[in-house]
Length: 320
Image (tube, rainbow, N blue to C red; front, side, top):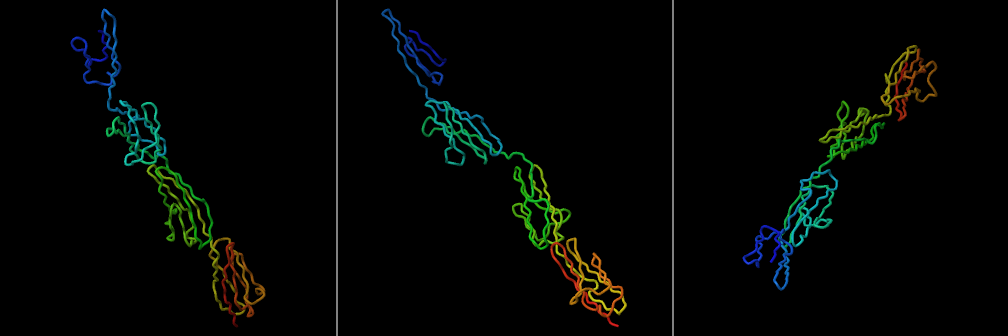
């Protein structure tokens, strides 16, 4: 008789008729053939041996995996066992089975990483008997310095109006947006919501440069807006009342607060025009070298700019 031996744990008993395999392992699997030779001829018998064994699972890569947020991740689960293992993927803390691609003895999961996850694979050859290796996937924010921009870099507004300045910023992690004013605090009538600075009832004192600052752990970025607040004129007369005698000189000065340029125009209330000999300047000054009794009356100065007008009155009394 001739025996073909395949491993060191295979032995033949006395007489050569018994073949013993101790502690059978996957390498012993196969067909065993016994051949008997006699003077009458030859006889052959074959026995097939199938060795069942628990699955052995290998993950590639084994993890933990650290990847950029939003990037795809592919993990391969390869298993060996008899009967052939069935492989499924699940996310830790979830009962939902993940969609995978299977080929030969490998099962591949492909996911996009938006959250930190632990992925577990199950491979088993018997009901209730399963291996559960796992791989941790840790999405990382890409290192991007913040960049910001404002809706407009220069603006001119009218006093008393409401103004909004929008600031948009990008980066990873998402930057925090704050607003400030160059060399001055923000106006007390202000709010900031989702990067939008709102100023209520602005005045000329609110003019200046406003700064949007976007900050995250990798740095900061700044964007600037220059705001100019314009206002209509507010006119006054110095003096607003004067008493003179005939022959005295008259001098009236019209002053105006507001956005320049400002134009001045004098007139006399209830009269067709100014008295003869009256002189006026572009700076708002009115003069009469020698007044007469008929020069008495109320003089009006109108100050105007491209936004509006304002009036100031001066009463002139002349007595002998």
